[in-house]
Amino acid sequence: MRVLPEGLDEARLCRAWIVIRADGARLGFTDHDRDLVVDGVTCRAGGGWSPGARDTAIGYAPGQGAALGVLDDAGITEADLAAGLYDGARVAELRVDWSAPYRVVRLWTATITAVSREGEAFKATLAGPLADLDRVAGRTFTRLCDARLGDARCGIAAPAGATCNKRWATCVGTFANGVNFRGFPTAPGEDFLTLYPVEGERNDGGRR
Image (cartoon, rainbow, N blue to C red; front, side, top):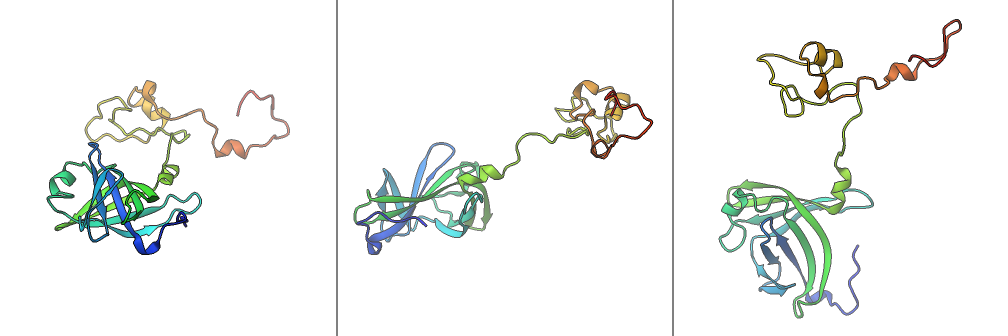
C-alpha cells in the first residue's frame, strides 16, 4: 500500500493516468470532473479511460491489470489502435491533488501488452515491471533440436510433406544438415544419471 505524503487531503485527491505511446505522444486522463495539467500533460476528464480489474504485484509476482475505455476522436482513436501505437505503450497511474495538480503521488507503472476491441470500447491488458521476471529467456538444454523444419534457424527448404523428429541422426542422415542442428546431441540424459559401477566392467571413465 502506498502511503500518501503528509499534507495531502483525501477529499481533494483524484486519479490520473498518463500514457506514453510508441510514437512518443503523451496522453492524459483523469477521473476528476474537469481537465487537469499533470507533469505537463493535459489529463482529460471523461477522456475514455478507466481502470479495470487489477491484480496487485506482491513480492515477486508480475502483477497484471486492465484498463477499459471508449474510443473517441480527441483521445484514443480507432485508427491509432489499428496502427499499433498503443502496443508496448507505458502507463502511469497517479494520485493528484486537483486543487494543486503539481502535488502528485505515483501509484504504479505498467506496459500495455495487448489491446482488444468490442464495438466502440476497448480493453488494454497491462503488465507491471515485474512481469519481465516471468518471461522465459534463453534456450532449453536438450538432445533434440529446438528449430522448426524449414525455418531460418533450421536453414534448409523443407521438402513437401517432410517431417523431422528433431534428432541428430535424422538431421544428418536424412537432411544432411548437421551444421545447423540446434540441439545438444552429446548431452547426458536421464540414463546417465542412473548409471552405477558394475563388478567386472571396465570403469576407467572412458565411456558413459
